[in-house]
Image 1 (cartoon, helix red, strand yellow):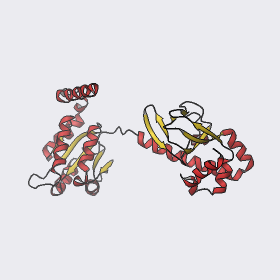
Image 2: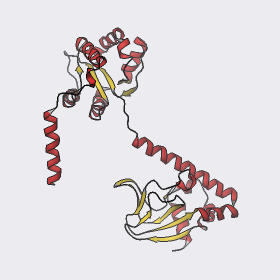
Image 3: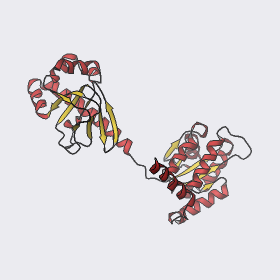
Image 4: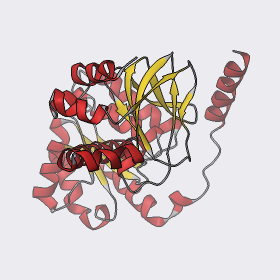
Amino acid sequence: MDHNALVNALQSKGNLQHSFKTAEIEQMAAHMSIETIEKEAIIMQKGEPADSMIFIIDGLVQILDSDRQLALLSTGDFLGESLFSEEATRTANVQAVEPATVGRLTIHDFHHFLQDSQALAIRFRQYFQAIGSARAQQVAAENYVDSKKYLALIAHNNMKEGLMEFCDMHSDKLEKFPLIATGTTGSMLYKKTGLCLSRKVASGPLGGDQAVGTLISTKNICGVIFFRDPLSSHPHHADIEALGRLCDVYQIPFATNPQSGEAILDYLLSGKAERELIPNHVLKAYVQGQKKVVEAG
């Protein structure tokens, strides 16, 4: 396969076509070597020097972190832009999912490109640096682990005024916690007490209760104060029940009125919440049961 196939792949597919003309891509491609890769062959090895880039002419290629697939790339895509970053070594493996053909640009090839067309080579380098920075930020965001333990403040519409009165009365205690609530509750909270949310979720009917439930399962909630309207029906009643059930599963303090809310604040601030909990035998039995199911499968 010749360099025309490489130029056609990069010019007709992928993102290079949006930033460079065909003639410019041809100039860079002229400095690359063409390689045929067997199925499941490792193209780039984690830990090896980051001294080349790969441009896919045909076939599928995957980026792997251990056994986790980070990305699946095809014709017109490229990888290895760490060639132009401060990273000295590869941070992941690159493997051919099926037989593939690629163009490889090494650091030596790029130096020759610089000598032949310095301005264009620098433009390509700046482009790949920008792409590499964006991809690094995306990976960092995907791998980010929030270690905060939020106090959730929730109230049905008819109970929001009561929640604000409660928060105003206990603002000195609430300011000691990272708070999570809906945007509406957060705005009311700021106007009433000057307190700001650390994180916000959608309203309950739009998934807010489920979002808080997810944070409970990831151990990011230290308590839930949920002023429920006991005299009205609610379209998302199942979500409300599910939130309370998750609090029981993970032993999260759950208050539904001002008096129990005050008790939770005092409990959390006393330091007692840091003590070892009474074992949750139901949860332990469930986890063991799921493990047996996986082992049997």
